[in-house]
Length: 331
Image (cartoon, rainbow, N blue to C red; front, side, top):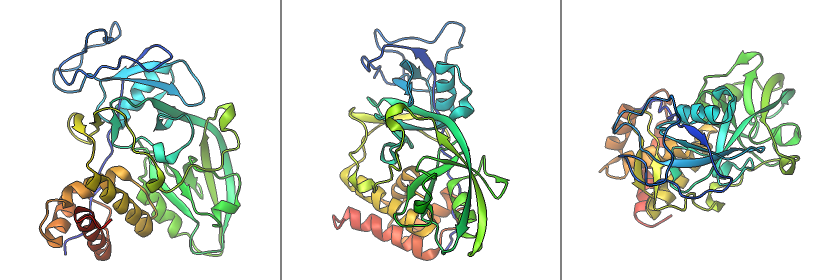
């Protein structure tokens, strides 16, 4: 079976303007232009090419506290971070990740490949740096890794009772800056997870981490890594803005019940096999597999669309089975 699946780059996002402290009057005008009463671009900024980006307006704040800004015109995550940087006059590289509808470090509300049309975006920026010496005295560290689609890998879950769980200074949301002095900026989550798995047992290693800046009511939070099945689906609008690695963002209907169940199961399989969680990657795999007639066609589609993952055969068959179970209502 042809495997060796490819990298799916996550898309960057947005543009800004200071706005009201409440979320109201978002533009849902589609792709052609602003709705009546919605803000235009700031003076001096060139207009977006016609048809390239949807003219939808989202409200945003820095998670640790800030005025509310409005952003628009983004198609991927890098553009989003750039627009947030412009809105708050900070370098885009300071943005670690975003959560939807909560300022807390809640990994179940992590912004991935889509945003509900009424979602409020909270940007978490770099805070304190820390260096931790870890003894790997077990095969597994108890970490699940994700990334922000813009070069930062960070901790999405810490397994209870694991090596990392016993180190109180390490928290969900911490960005992994380096391992034993090897810089990880620009690495994908699966690359970082593989590096951690390959560290020799019985040896010490050094982690350099950056934690997100916290508001007062976030101090002392240990984690936000509950299983995705317990989360309420994001987005209260009638559709979502789907971010693309290539091409413009598009407004789509919310995923069907079958797709939501399949995505959740595939995300669980990613964590089990690879130590990562990536709902956008899971959604892509479900999209590729839902109309395929057999697992060989599914594997071929994965091989053509993705790269660098090199998923094992048993993982591909399990994903194929999960999609089939969801379609048949067995999940």
